[in-house]
Length: 400
Image 1 (cartoon, helix red, strand yellow):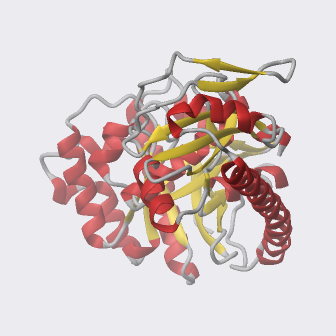
Image 2 (cartoon, rainbow, N blue to C red):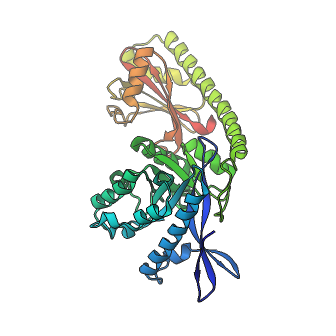
Image 3 (tube, rainbow, N blue to C red):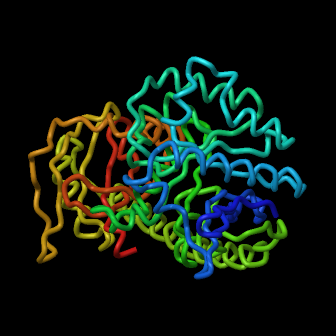
């Protein structure tokens, strides 16, 4: 393998490669090129050097170009279809905004002979103050050649949502370690789902790095990640692996996840059926007027499934026409009138759910979400009461 040496210390600087695996194919999708220093004392990451405030920016840039050159040459010579992820700081790229044809990486791509379709330009996290529209033009140059664009460390530093919208990346990269350290770590699975939703809506794929355990892989599957990277599979290594190096391992884990998820989904269907049966029985036996909807809720409360902690009724336009009927600590039910007249149409799936319930006369169990009032994770079961009113049952998922 080619290498670059620094004669003053006789150290060797090399690109190492950390595998990125695909949950879709269970094959290695690509490798991120990461700089390493090899000395008599062992192998060291160059990450601290690139993040150092003491080392001059020009020295970092020159060293990075050497590493990019070696990585592109190595990848061009190795064959195969795996992608090569190379990191570029937006401030480095931006220097060439007035002379796009002179972008150094374009020359490196051409000199190495690599197919640009095998290259992913990974925009790294930093505070960037340049013109985003110009940065977008630069990204278009790379994309026009066939390169893909990834944004690193989604949710921190450079990678805010305005810039994501401007650059239109093919891959959004989230570091699990950053989320674990954040104040919302207890809800990081929900945060990951929101990133997955962003990726889906802009036509990008979600890549999770920092995968260190089987639990992280299950979390990734739950969140909708397509690609995974981390020490669970491999540290950065000096050469490329067989494309199927982790296929059997992933097949075993995904099979286990499917079996667990299948059982959990059946439990949800069972609860949904029990709720539907309970509501249908109450509707059949209810002798009161629908003008007395609060009385119906109290009537239903004596029969409803114990996972339900709150009930209310809305019209199809979203207006709440009942009080909140809420289970108390002593298991009695209390009518709370604070939300009468408020409108819930703003919830993302409200209208589509109303249309489905009205058309098919069925109940719907929502996805898990965060409750605004109790600050806990819940699901909501909703169903038609009559032609114009709909019942909503909030459920404590910890009891499911």
